[in-house]
Length: 307
Image (cartoon, rainbow, N blue to C red):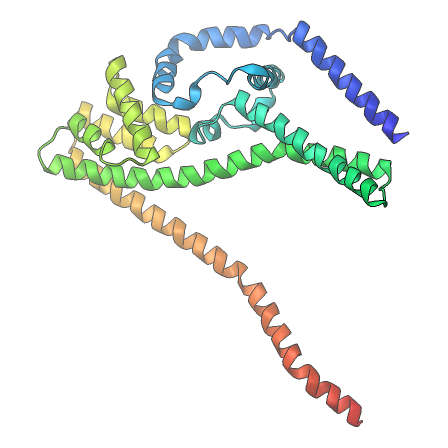
């Protein structure tokens, strides 16, 4: 009975996929109007991101790219893409089509593992019940579907923390360059070019894109900060914009912001270290109890034998 249900579900999914490929989902009128209204206001920002972010390239060709693109369109049409934040995709240098393609690949690979183990059990002479294999295939396939999403979120979290540290170092370099007599534009460009780190390279590409599109460099940094979810960079861009338009003291403002970012990062690292220390308390207690039992058990056993 279970095998028939699984086969029927597979055939139904195949028919649905064939139907959607022949007659794709039409976008709603509201989404079309919203995209048209946002086109003029975000056109320049999209141009900045396209020039500054190498991850905004087209999906790879072939079956993998086609499957990923179609799956991404289905997710966007149903509004399911809200579970995948755009800032996480941007900071992880990932796109929705590639993420969907990777999810389908992992789902297929994880779903094949129980089948392979089942074949090995048959070859060994102790076959497993087909019903259990069917449930294992279903659970493993569902688990493989979410593995790329969890990996992407973990990668985005780590890279965002690294980006914050890079922003603090970048501000320090800008302050030093200004102290040497450079202007704000030259200081930003020189500071972004001082390291081969990926975060510095990302800021440098944003500044180069702003130069080609005739956009102020602080606007480019602010757009980059909003895109990757690093609000500290957006705040830095606002400080620089204020200094450029209102005549504020640029170097003192940036130095104060750099010191503030360093203090925030130190506090974040201390909080993380304290959390790790608290997590290690329980394993330490368990080890101590086990050691005491290991030491005291022979004496306790000898006392029982005497009595």
